[in-house]
Amino acid sequence: MNNHPRPLRSQQLSFRHHEVYIAYTTFCRFMQSDPTLELEIIDSTSYDKGSWTKLNESGQHVIRYDNRIILAGHSFGGCTLLSMLSTLPLEGFSKLPVERTVILDPWLEPLPSPGPVPLGNSSIVPAGEAARSEEAAVVSSHKNGIASSEVTLHPRMLVINSETFTLWKDHFARLQEVVAGWGPHGGKILTLVGSVHASFSDFPVFPIFRKRNARSIMETITKLSLAFLDDKLDEILQTVPTVKMEIMTIGVKKDGKPKRKLVGHPGDVVVQ
Image (cartoon, rainbow, N blue to C red):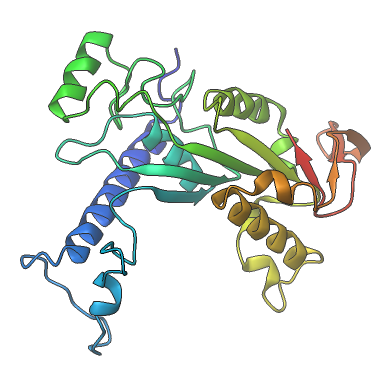
């Protein structure tokens, strides 16, 4: 087993874990009006805290923060989400009540291999550490107050890939294996023809840097993501242009390897 092929990236993953848990825990304290929480407004202006913490007619918080939360991440952010969803919570923190996750062009190389798989589907691996024995993992789960019934469930997942990452053979094969572990309810990969790694940011739509088809590709990413969150992904896939996974050679790279691309028009969706 190759636990951590990139040690420094493994440390960065651990750092990211801390960032997410601390940010989420702090936001919960804010929503619960924790009197020990010190809040500093950067521009020293006032704000309406009640607009954040008010309740609806059913007595529930208008902003849902304590259950059914959604996580999204791009590139190393997607890598971080996969890592977090396959490891125990950090010591001192509770398990995040994640319902769904949207992962955009995830970079998998910093993750332990084989895996990752949903927490509860295999040996539990503590965040930022190498795999431990099954006995140690069970002890760790009890220390964090996680019942066995809790670790067997995992969030639904949508992965939207760029064409360039899908054409990355070894990486895409591993992605398919990873996402398959999120079945039977979650785990779907969509690829957008003509997209690149930066297509998931707003950089390609900026003036001067604007790329052709960048806006339409971003709109498709948004449409697919929102449909997934609203349980309407299958419906939306009936309305957007979809194509089969076909690859054609269009030339030769500088290193002599064939230059390939997906068959289709920019923005077409390949359903894997």
